[in-house]
Length: 363
Image (cartoon, rainbow, N blue to C red; front, side):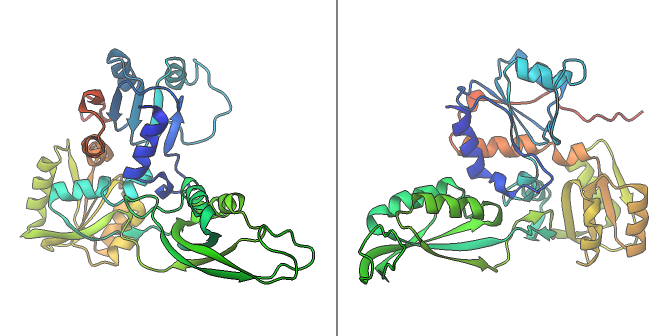
């Protein structure tokens, strides 16, 4: 299996198109046609994780957090020693960050299942628009146009790719002076057997899909329709739902700490509500405090809550259980491992990192 093939498989699990605009999920460094020897799964790419990869003859690391977030102007051994060693050691590097945070079946869903939270909806639905794309094409050219659309990112619905609906019919047109018709003669009406291809395309892939269709389509002026799909998407940042039992706040907090095997938790207690309705955002979730407060949630579970965010939560009457960023996202390794195995990736080439750890120490 080549790196490029694995990348396509990962895109099926969790489409990279879901990532937030600020993010850099996907290829960090790679030879796309290199064979995949062994894969190391980790939350971060650190020096210890890289050493672990080299010790195990790994040539590809899949991490949750990208090593590269911003454009680089130069890479030197002195200022970027880790990246320099990755490149010179020919270690392929792929990140699955916010696309894995937002996706159905992604990291938030995995941790919610672990905690027995029955998901109702995301905390903040993905704002990306999705469109229905309908194209009219002569029957003999339908396969070529469909393939072009799929290669441009159209046709993805959840974990399914290359989705379309096809209807046979008749198209009519009359070429006028100044045209160069693929079929028919100028000034004469034509009736052509055509296929209407309907598929879906996300906002970020829309222009690419239009251009790919026009290149593959035989007509000088292809006919096509685009309209927005207004249905609510069940993917987005974080989630909220319900737990089976009603808990006391402190009791649930201690149980959750043990369940996640967290080094510590910090409780921001604003009231004595019993715990039934719970919100969750793995990693850093302080930006969602306002959203959560509007949902009448009993407890919000997340990480990286600053002093001033804690004060705001108290003002809003919101209970927050803050868990270290690492302890909410370390489950990326187990989650992606299970999904890769289900996709048919041999267990023998998958290695769960034993060297990933939090950068913090409690003294």
